Length: 46
Image (tube, rainbow, N blue to C red; front, side, top):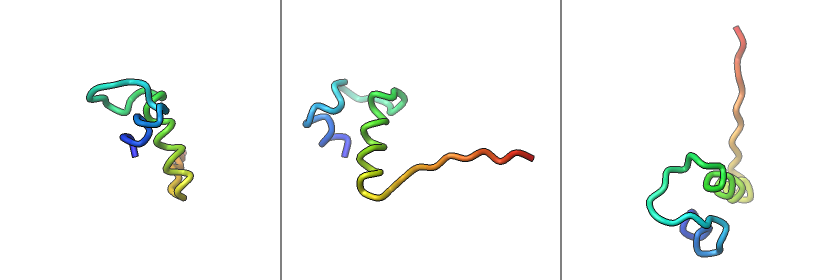
């Protein structure tokens, strides 16, 4: 998926990268969501 995003120009950075920047993980999360895989974060208060 990341390779496809690099080839299509959605990710402009090059090299071996950690997915810690929004410019890297946002397009990947968007692509996953389009495939029906969504990430939900919740916080449980005690």
